[in-house]
Length: 258
Length: 249
Image 1 (tube, rainbow over the protein chains, first blue to last red):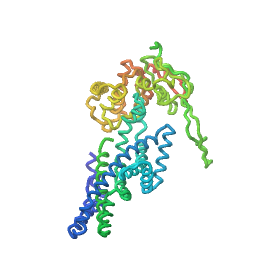
Image 2 (spheres, chains in turn yellow, cyan):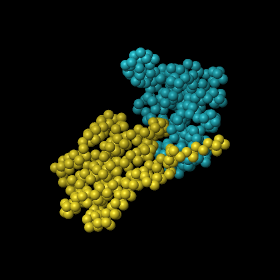
Image 3 (tube, rainbow over the protein chains, first blue to last red):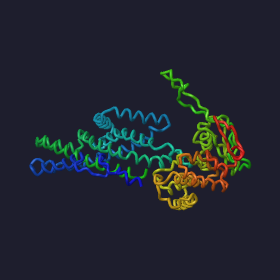
Image 4 (cartoon, rainbow over the protein chains, first blue to last red):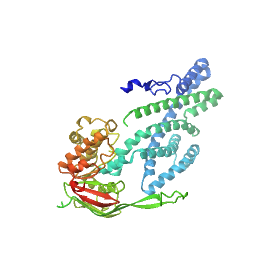
């Protein structure tokens, strides 16, 4: 057959997708960061080992804030996203105004605002107001992602569901949202990474996250350079690890049906 | 149940409002005024379909064929006029439209299978969700329906793994799962390769023989001769010509 005579697959110009590069940017950054960290600990354990032993509590806190925030943000984002496509004008306006307002105010300002505004009414722990602030902010971004994801599902899907006698809300739940999930998972993963980084902002409200632990250590020992080097490297390793996970998820989804 | 008709359409008018230019051909005007324009898709159309009748609707594109059948199960709302299925007035705003949609199954040009579900789940979904049928029973029935459309071995396949003709046959089975009294086909074979058209038409022929009331928008003349009781020719939202297939061609 003709296929035998035209060796298209032998072309070498375009790297094939399955081929793994040995020195990809990701690998250089990730293993580089780990390597430097290990090197520093072995080379001069005096400040570096102490710093590293001081930080795990902070990493845990950062995680806690990030995961709680993203979960709450997903709930808010889902409501905002559904609100944005709602045909009820009132709901639509509320969702749109929420998204416009929140996206127009810096996260740091929002954190202060929610902390002090809520602090006037009820006494809530720092970590709670930090999580609320992050979730309210990221809920707006996720809302737009979810809106776009819902609209990316072909219109015929809703029509077919309606034609079978499903109500609009049931069609949403059984047909549209499961397909939206597949579309929005990668961008939500990216938001998760962004949130992980932005969670360092909550260190200004006595939440002892990774950055704040670093600040505490540095303030005691005056080893600012060394401490922040380690803090930066730890953040880098965490975000690179998660971006690897997101990439894996993306590959998994694109290999799947459709 | 009313004796003489299955579907009765009276003075159905549908006017779409679209954004457009007055005269698209006029290229001299550089600043073209875009304004709301009215397009008449159905113009005081009357049609009665008897039980077990198979009606084929043909006509040039934009003549309102699809709009007509989309109005019957209210995927579109009529501007004025009324549509009755048995003695339910479909166009009455207070009627439970979901019941009407259960009565009238619909098959689309682009199949519109649910991409995230396999063939079996596609067919079984509506009975489970809408009728509250137990899962096992729904799956059992879905298997029977898939067998009827000749796809017994494809129940685990996802839509992306099926050919166009197979997808369309699953879509027919999916519509049948709700036990409709009427089946409406919106250009069911237009998106298919010639060799796949036959397998879909065969299933439709089978349905027609079993006495299903069918409204088919299609240009398949072979199907018209083999199964249709009546052919309707539409243009600009009106019925121009109608009659039995051998008379019209």
